[in-house]
Image (cartoon, rainbow, N blue to C red; front, side, top):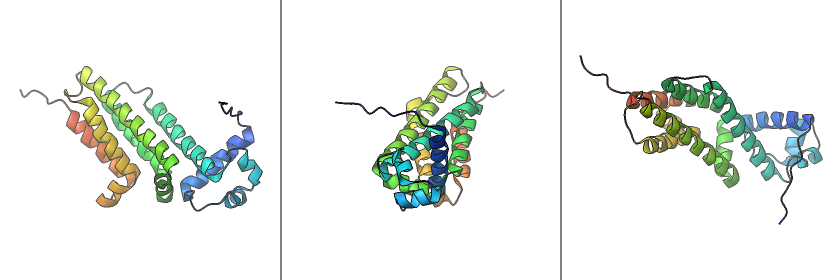
Length: 198
């Protein structure tokens, strides 16, 4: 069995992937053909084939790039925050900011195509795992009350997925950013240790 070795991208390919990501985030990908994409990006189909062997594989690559970049930017935002409460709030605010870049059509297309949906689900699981780690740290340090961190994180993960798919914001009549703010408030208020009454 031979493994596929992916060559390093040229600067032009990096720039092209960035433009392709911006286009797909704004308009989705399901309705595009490779000819459409080549025309919109002012490049040849062979240039796109150098990035992926098919439109579907190109979509998987671009969606993966978006989620990887989003995760890295969110991690950069929380890197220097020591207070775990502030870290949870900043993490969720970062997720809201990243989602603002994605159109409803993009989210719909990602959810409807199994390979990109798998990438999306991995991203939601990773977010739940990060929140679980924050909760465990907060409980250990006495900042949060003692809770079942894995259960709370999985519940938060389901809410994140509901926000990312647009179901919760649509039902509640709010923006994704408002939904993430509310999730942050719900988590932080629910985890807060009760101050002893004097």
